[in-house]
Image (tube, rainbow, N blue to C red):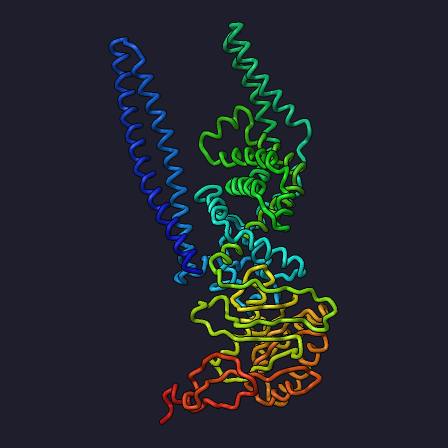
Length: 599
């Protein structure tokens, strides 16, 4: 199945590369024609001036030059599109064959302070779930994707996302169109850039300013026209025009502090507005059946005219950086007019604009999940069930592997929580795979609740709130030991479970490893009793076999499982398979030999 999408990517990449070569060659020819025509135009003009001859040849050469220039620019745009598509499919092939599974985006700017599983499960950061999924066109799309991975939603919402992703997954042409939106290279902005402008206090320019500016502009233009027609004395005309221009520029200078703030706040938005406007046109014009996609379409029915206005204003703002903009600024107060227009636009469309941004961001995030689904056609959409009258959360998975590992190389395991067993107590030595199994459970839950298919044979789960204690560290700056960090995290996980009865899932690695066995057992039992009482389910790992008896207590509804080498002669030859019961093997001597200390 992966081969099919890889072959399609290669076919499209080759076609795009071929088109790029052809368009580049055509563009070079048109550029040459334009240059030759320009030379002939100059020659014919020189000849006409020297001999007082006809200008028809000059005009003909000028027309040829203009046409060739237009065709050259058109082929340049075509070659840029072809180059973008070629890069798009090359990146896709890298993801499918495992050579470059990460997009290069980390999403670390979207991290939420105090989050209970983001760092533990590698949701954001280098080599993360986000990096695997982040094929969005804009940062607002990336933010929406991160939120899907970091926040729990209702079962109905998850099912709606699944339906949307399933409908979008085969639509490669649509994803291609999204990749071509906007400019080839533009400055990527923080996701909140538009919101910062929309949330900023309005400039509240006086209502009469626009009318007075227009009146002064009309006055000096009319004065020049009337003076030329009536043959008014030049000095008198110049004095009056200068006076009118002086009044106009004095008014602009008075407004300059407010104008500057407005224009500075919007000067980088122009590169994004084209993507947003074209993208919403694409969303609105598509034919969808999935409930969530139809809802997104219904929220952007009347946006185009308003966004077209905003785009014109922002294009004008962008031109402030050019040398020629000083002329219209001096003559008609172009910058001031742009600021006035932006302020008035924000007053009218601030709230709808937030909705349009949210709709586009969610659509982009769903497209990113659809790209992942198309490139992992062997994955399965889990069954997401309503909590109903259940007394515990539910998580069942068959042949489950970690989504960041190649399916062909990963070891699959079965896990069932919530029917008879509320927690698994996993014993085993280091390197046996305990931590990876915990992360595998968590990563698949995160993907499943985002609406994506997961690398399993079958999965069934209720919507759960995740809490994990897998990657805690000490902090010298904060004066916090690793043990204290673990205590605080487990306190937060317990609070999460109590706030969400029968709908939490916990993952704990090496529980209370920083204390003695007696204290560890007592503290671990207290934590487990607290979690089980809320109807939470989960798994925890340990080296301490004394904790195994906790899973034997019938009131705790636990189960002992372990991970170990199947070969007693090779205690480090792990198969990473989950096995029933308590680990009874040791590998101390093997570790000593590994350190070269066996002598």
